[in-house]
Image (cartoon, rainbow, N blue to C red; front, side, top):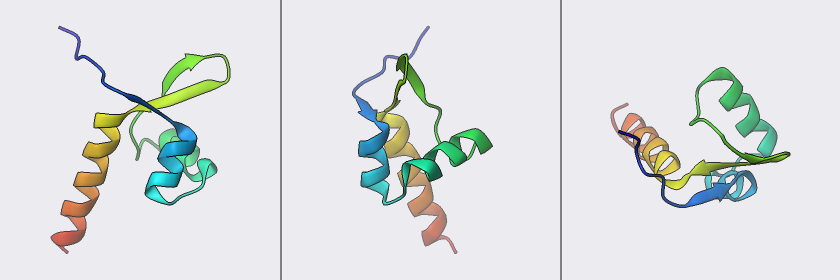
Length: 66
């Protein structure tokens, strides 16, 4: 069964939300340290909002445990 995807957030909005440059997001995605991109069309990608929220929650948890 496929998981339903909620809102899709643009790469620009994600970069702004977490305070990094788009190039950093691209680098993290290539390295597998950030959530996977969703290709929306030629030259257009986004991220599932729940994936980004989960990534942020894990980062907070990791920071709190150190």
